[in-house]
Image (cartoon, rainbow, N blue to C red; front, side, top):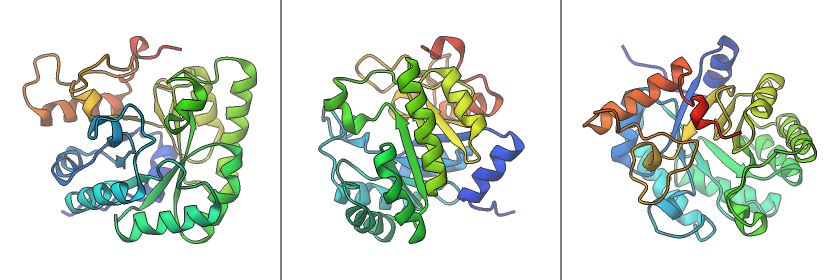
Length: 268
């Protein structure tokens, strides 16, 4: 029996039923097939490809053309999973630019949802995109594209002032029309609070187990990161697993049952 493809409506229904959403980054057709068949719900073509594939120190050098190229490869490999693609650095600098770049990702890359990093200043852009039929995934907390302003990859929302800003901006993104929200590197209690307060699904990375779903960088969860892995990640190739498919299946199961992330993988 054919399995119905995942849509933003599917994810909203999963949240309503209390079913956890499984997401991983993906950059090519081969892994798209593997993740899709393992039951991963959301394939995120992240601008993290600039670091894990291209060898850059940050995501800033990644271009829209490169994102569209990798998105198209993933689109050719997937059948069921929802395809979410990052708008890279400065691609959403203005609403008009965001519309043009989102069109490129959807028409050339096959994106079904575009993801934007940023807070209140993006509300008008999110509204414009959704009015034009572009589903949006917002991204709050640690913003890798802003690493030069932040001074490094640091957890956000640890004091009440910044936590309140993230709460307010999460609500604003939902009101502007965003279909999804990614929370990166924020305290678990804050992420759980926001997940409960919003109607849209919230997917966490380094944000504790209280979110509606989880996402990791594929290379991190396969133990392929040659440097120090993030504290919130887990090497699913460990524990005697000898095949990539087994590791992906273990990740899917761990997210579904709520055993990932564990307390040791929740820094704050």
